[in-house]
Image (cartoon, rainbow, N blue to C red; front, top):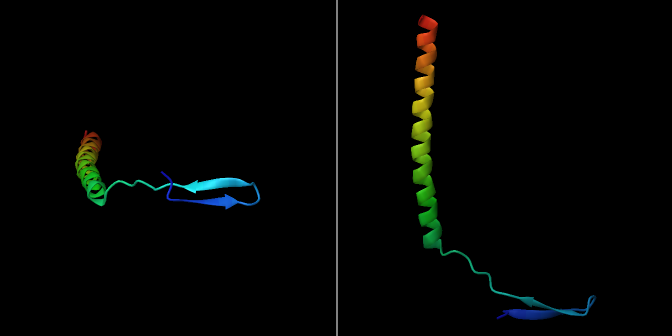
Amino acid sequence: MANSWKADLKTEQVLFEYPKFETPISEQIHLLWQENEELKVENKELKLALAESAEAQQLDKIN
């Protein structure tokens, strides 16, 4: 159901405005928290892989 309507005099059409349904703030917060936790895990894994790669490069230089 439309919130409001107006007539466009140039095109002679009736224009309707409908309500916008947005995700509740509590759900948005939960989704962002979840994404943040996933990014923390990914960041930790990337740091570990980088450290292992740097260590392997150092060992290659020594050998």
